[in-house]
Image (tube, rainbow, N blue to C red):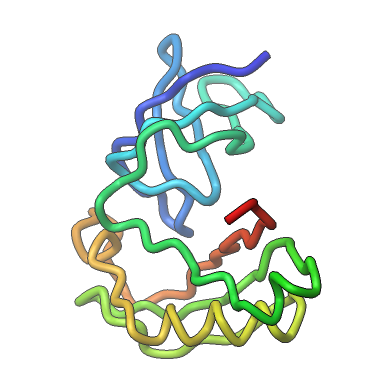
Length: 142
């Protein structure tokens, strides 16, 4: 069953936090200020983990990756998982590719190197720490 949730905060480790029927939901891949459709995948007492299914309203801080033309021609798609060291000021300090197609990974890292992560500096858990991102690259008609 999918549900709609407003994401309001970040948890330590980088998951977005929302609430549904009095329970705290942890949503990897979301950021505060977004409205998303999720599916609960694990429940424990007063909290649950949910999988992000659809972005209903993205936050202004969200940066979508640029789909490389060469990847589009080859019909390459899928996530690129990045490990990012974010400073307390929200600046990207270091970036590593964890997995993903090399052509898509290059596009994801080029984009992320130019972007800071201001949302992390506003979190109550602001600290220099590693975060994981998986920008999706999906083939779409132009």
